[in-house]
Image 1 (spheres, rainbow, N blue to C red):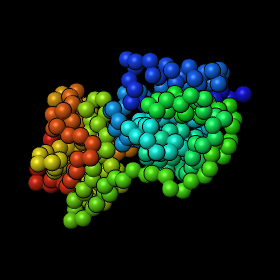
Image 2: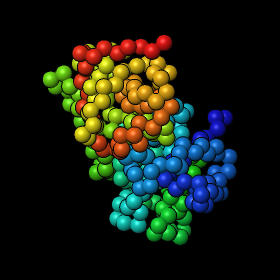
Image 3: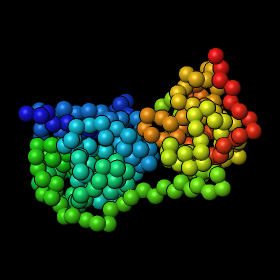
Image 4: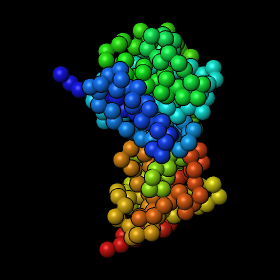
Length: 275
């Protein structure tokens, strides 16, 4: 029998007992489950950060994994709690967009409002729905409860807005969607976008973020530059990144999520590979 996996993601950190409390609730309902900590280092109340991290991790989990995700600045308000049934996985969390990027990538079948009190704790805190609603719902789903038993299907769920990639006049305009733990600046631009302006590896690119303009080479990997040098590349998540070899690009440039980036080829200044 295949072992059931439940992935946990939150902005709780590990200093306090919040994550442990959620795990305790899950184990009480489904003692044989395997819990995987996707991340508890999401930036506080940063739903976009949580959505990105979930979307980059979820595709590599076995079919049938249940993800419980709690980055919830609206906890205690009228915002819904939902279950998203994807083509491969189930997602549980607040209706604030955190689940939707991952679910959209695999395909959404149904979205349900969590209303059936049989699958949540008897006493509900106004400030800890992760423990009292989302964790027990996730545990029951992992035991085989059908998503439609959790509540009514809804169509008016929230999807995060994001700046579209615009390509015109041999220039790409995109948005910073994530800064990872190494300080790499990850954008919503993909390789196919770069190909439209005929960018290839070893090209020198002109990149503008805020008021800063950089001449940065587009390379396959970090080690093709010297330590401390800027580079750009397609990262493991499939998105265009700006990085510093053995450094923190986001800190150096004072960049954060939501900043607009423009990219064009700088044909007048060819890149010289270092030995």
